Amino acid sequence: MNDEFRLTIEALAKEYNRQAGELRAAYGKLSELTGTAESPDRMVRVTVGPRGQVQDIALDPRVYRKLSPSQLSREIMEQIGAATEQVTGRTKELMAPFMPEGLPLEDVLGEGASIDSFLPRPVKLPPQDGDARG
Image (cartoon, rainbow, N blue to C red):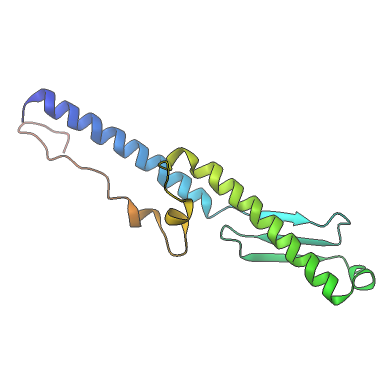
């Protein structure tokens, strides 16, 4: 392999590995995302995780005197939706620099998706004769 071609391939491999590393780091941050929403009267607070799963529901004890069961249910569902929107927004912000135009975020981050499922392993070049980089 001529030196110019090898240098070009090495530069491409280095850039790919850099971008893949940044993407893996961003994807790792996704698992830590949470969103918390609270009703205007502060009676209902809900926290959801990175995929919108409910992690906590906090109710002020006065809520039972103030809201009927159906109103309380609606308020909880409303706060779950608001907290999930927060997480979705942060996810889009975090992943936007890596998303090809036209590729839906759900295809990359949907149920069961993982970074390793669509990224190959880092590129390793075979050592050249007399090359100690290996």
